Image 1 (cartoon, rainbow, N blue to C red):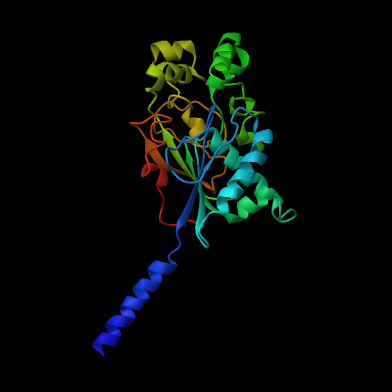
Image 2 (image 1 turned 120 degrees about the vertical axis):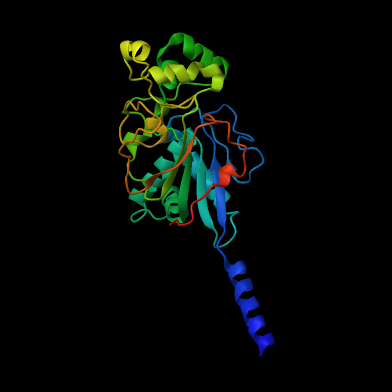
Length: 275
């Protein structure tokens, strides 16, 4: 009797282990001239041309996400893990999929929307960055950008008409926001430029007011705020693009915009309950 009982318990535990649903993580890189090994040796990295506006690049990103999905283990949960401009791409694809899926169920965006369980947006460019404003409008910075393979991409400017926060509101999928307030990268130069964004010279110089940011994006962008706005402290809050699906998850204070990309443990962070 005791032997049969132990065998029963072992069978239950073994079955639970076999049938436990695993995550299939798919990574989407940000604004870069070359996305190869962007996330180190992590599997399922989507490589795409980030020097394009979102309407042109998103269909290509979507097709490559679907290719990576085909390699996911059967019955696994598909989790998208985009960084920076990649988060804008994913938000756009899911939002359009939410709109399309009933009438156009076979569309790539619809297929992705229906299959994705959750998103982890690492310092996402939902409202772009004033650095891109400079690249797009200033001849000198545009020239420097061209030399380093960084072109003007209006989608990641702070122009309301262009950035993804105003093109798509709801992703229809839980989106966990990982953001940083460490602006030490690039010797703090870019971080200082962004800190001045939306701040008057008087407040910046004499009141030491800063628009909080990492070294590439203001946190109103990475935290998925509904509107671009001045956020004076690292704990400033805002209304989200979609309060139902955007969730503040991790606030990174010691690593800037790109320092964690090859940290496997950090890039696989997750919450216990998901869609």
